[in-house]
Amino acid sequence: MTTPDARSGTGRPAELFFEDLVPGLTVDLGVVTVDADEMVAFARRFDPQWYHVDPDLAAASRHGGLIASGFYTVSLFMRAYVDHLLSRAAADASPGLEELRWLAPVRAGDRLAVRVDVMGARPSTARPGLGTVSLTGTMLRLGPDDRPEQEVLRTRFRGWFAVRPVEADPVEADPVEAAPADADRPGADRPADGPIAADPPTAAPSDGDPTEISGSAEAHRHD
Image 1 (cartoon, rainbow, N blue to C red):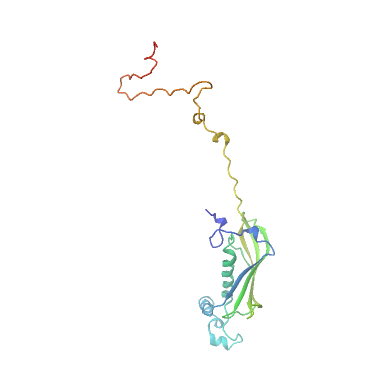
Image 2 (image 1 turned 180 degrees about the vertical axis):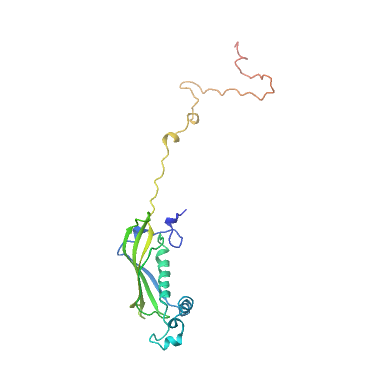
């Protein structure tokens, strides 16, 4: 059974642990395409400012059309982070963000390349068995040729990850307890230089009267 510390952020068995997230590592989190209906539905539910939800007002403004809520954009980042890293890593909770910046407007149809870079890692002093990893996440808008055109989001945050479990050494059997008892060893009833001792005769059930035992010492007293 997989222990909680050995599960990924999505509950599956983990394959990456704190020791694998070394400074300098870059993890490609794939490319996401901004869906127009989802973008507007999110804004109507969580951030209904006019430049997110009113196409006419947004078109007549300096924005030139609807732009995504920044919180929708960071939600796209989070989903990519879960799908491509936390689903594989022994992730615990996060102690929080240090920075979240929206560097350029995001619009419906944009294709955003997502990545995360490991900036630092150290064992946690507050949470034994975990390590603290400092990460920078970025999203870059891609052009028609799939080359990055502009960075649209940057975030710095920390995550807790479980250290790799140590496999327990198999317990060796106690040689004293493992040895068979004398009564269980073959030939245990055999004298050193003689025949195997016969089993003692067994008496049949009685109703209170003495029962003669065939072959008893009494029967052969004078032999």
